[in-house]
Image 1: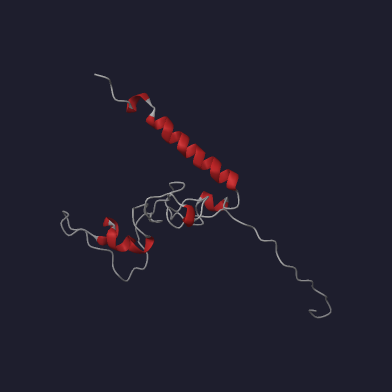
Image 2: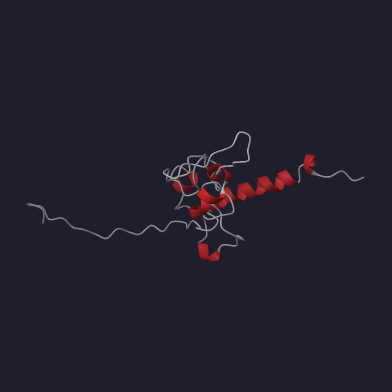
Length: 137
């Protein structure tokens, strides 16, 4: 009861989303069934864990041997200030960002499968393009 009103409280129906892998950061499978050979950074798509990004990437680590020298990112900055690259859509955000179009479709397994099929087809088409073939001598 709230005042003079009788309010019924019902349990919400759970909406199961499509899992996002914490290893390769692609949608559609959990980390336990990932076939990726190693971890992928959700910020830059590099071959490292997200918590290692600041210490292994050139954008944050800096390069004292470069001309002019590139200083490392200030330790007081908590996140990498450099441009991110999404492994799913290629956009300028983290792979697990709400800005990603895959996030908007996180409950739609068919949409996610269709988008990944498009990406695979584009890669196949790019490999079989006549400009990519080696001439026979």
